[in-house]
Length: 191
Image 1 (tube, one colour):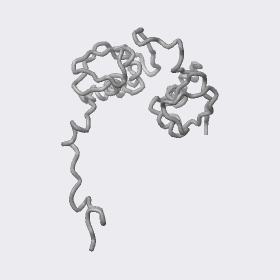
Image 2: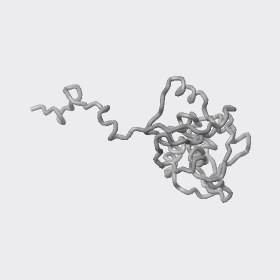
Image 3: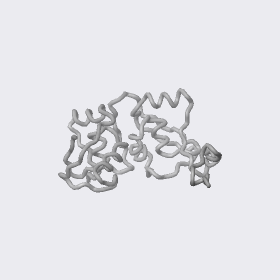
Image 4: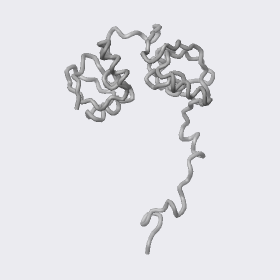
């Protein structure tokens, strides 16, 4: 199994993006190494790597000899205009997309960027926290598209991603009752 020694000021997310090609892989990486995704890693710590999720992104970091570092003192402040150039396409940055009624920042990232990997840049561009509630009709500046195929799919199908709370969705959850769902000695007592 492959492993990596942590560079100075790297987070679990940095390693996941650099070596596995996906920020979503941070959760698998943390679980496999007995870490929390929020843990600060000591430089030189050996981390076991699971299988790559997106080899294009991992290869990009390798070819450019880039080592992402979350805890860098040189990190840009949220109010600065940050431009990130993605390797997968040449689509232009989009400004002024309106938020629908129940969209979260993660929904907007998937809808207009095609990936959750753009959610951090989306938050920075709009001076928001990842957990901020968005207002219906709020205008957001959208970063470059990460996966144009996903964006095209949602656009062509007319799909608007919205996060629905459990309270909003209680009617949609079927009640599992009846003999098909009974368990012997739990719902159905044999005497």
